[in-house]
Length: 276
Image 1 (cartoon, rainbow, N blue to C red):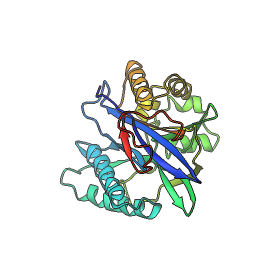
Image 2: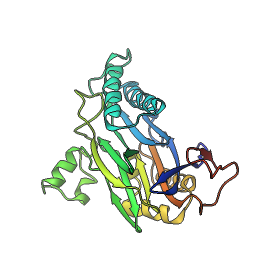
Image 3: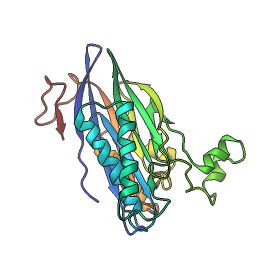
């Protein structure tokens, strides 16, 4: 497994400076020949994409989508409109790629970003497909996103229980993706920025192998994002690693003035990113 490091960034909110920290990783798993997942974790955008499609289609779809969203961060304007514009471009990239030969080529996309509205700074989660965002708040794990999948529709309709969904033959069939057809905007959920919050953004390669309780357990056991990421990845691989596994842990550490500064931290600069 590749070494994972924790990065940090300070954010000014209502006269306080909060310190964000995060880490992410991806692994091919034990049964797949290639890794069709991709991820991006740089302030203020944290996303996971799980590609699908024959030949190299899934890898093309996830990489194209992440690359377009990287450009959004580079532009300095990370908002819903710019994200949706980038996804429109990604759909075109996927369709025009010479190795895209399967009509089922596409990718999930899920993640969080910080959005500012005047003095109000808050998180926004976004989702297309069945990759997920979880939030550990007040020691309670919540699934923020809702899967776009056949089994989720059956659960919502009361025709299937969550327990029955785990072994359902259509458990891998999603109903929305980037690149599979005309783009539908992501589902968005707005969340307040609160000290102590911890997010897990992941592909279904993690949730196939770890229950919600397992995710919560590893977050409780590991305060450092990189350590939590490595622990969850190791557990997913030990439990079978049936799919590519990708995850990011993002947390709000509280007042930056009270946080322990690592080597090279500049606590006087709220715009400084560091690695620990």
